[in-house]
Length: 340
Image (cartoon, rainbow, N blue to C red; front, side, top):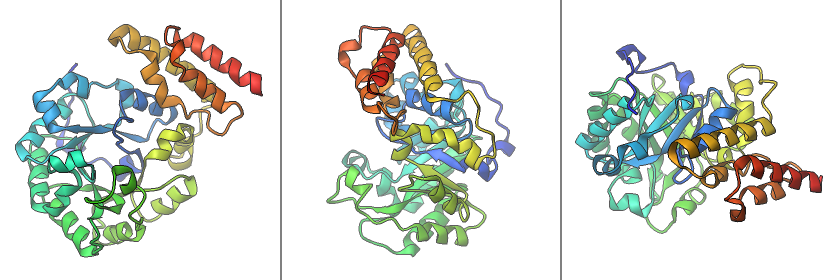
């Protein structure tokens, strides 16, 4: 359902605190069910969709790609594409559907993205990125942001990423989320591209020094609060990827650690699991979504606790698909108690 929102121009660029902590867009992972879980754990973290290509919105089922829950705010739509007119059309759709930000993917190195000549490939053509950003800025009142790498292939020149940011900023982008690795467009898989090119945080720090008026957030390899705090001492934000997915309970500490809020006394793993069961029942009734496709996102919820493996095994047991999710939760708890 489309959401009518008042979006005065003054709201286009919220305070930099909006980007203090965010969960990265991750293909096949950060769907609306995953984001619902993450919002149960943190009231303030900025959540990103999976990348949605402009082609999927121009030619496909808009509702399927853009539907999300009201509880997810603040939530950003990440677009993949390169044609300014298509980007403008899709950005406008994103704003109409109620997203708080439109983000352009200039960092994904996958073969599919390369065949479409977008993602990390776009860093080689900053003028085209600038044209796309301007086209979006001209038609929406929410922030238009860019997520990118520090370079492509084996070129490790700071001047390359500096000129990219400078050119795109002139088109109206004031928020850059920087994955602090190069993207190697040949010879590495997407997984290897998250691990093999070295992390160079100092490049992102240098960008902030050179562009102090821009919001600069960093992405890449963060797994602990001390690491996040170290980056927030010099940058505006930190984006966390795979650790947030595999260890979602970490998000439950973010509001207290980074937003100055007291942790809710009723926020427990068991309470979150029960609320996810309620959500599963709602999704089944409203959209015909089976609980099994939602449960996969919370399999890391008990990481590090006794019985976590048995708990995961119950929730991922396909033989239990015919049960109500509340019954599955009861079986999972029995399995935990059996090994306690």
